[in-house]
Length: 209
View 1: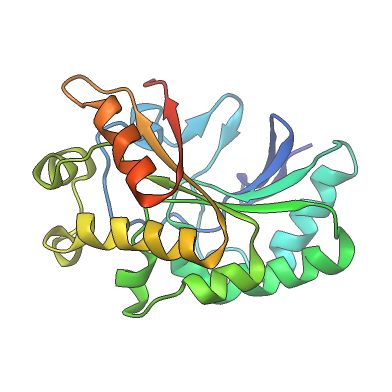
View 2: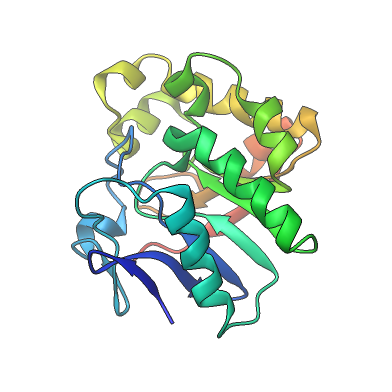
């Protein structure tokens, strides 16, 4: 059922969706990330992309391979990397999915640093392609955000502020926006819930591994 490239899962079924693993690049090394805790695996799947990242045609073929065997209601950009590194591919894939599966919900799971990655506000482009965004914030404290997310140097100073601004832009654009928080020792999940409410976003806690 899993579409693979070099023995790595590109599209995989999870709950009521098809999830897409399109890059392993990430601006953070979150201390709770299961790609390290589980050595790039989840259940029976390997998410370590070997060689070049999959092309749009490979990703679409992978979606179709899973869709032939699984009923789904949404497609989610959520692999072992930050999907917004591949913004042009997200936009192209979404256009193709809209044409083939107009009723499918399209969602992005992200750490919210896409604007820093691209050095511009990418939310209008995402709004043209997606229905929903889930942003992993995990704390309402900027210093703790750095400790939890362990961002690359380029993202340390402005990372938390940029992620919060990304949420604001998503809410203002009309995207169905959810802030998420992993239940980590020392993290105030209730504070993240209040932060989400102040931004006009939904909130969802997530269990730690």
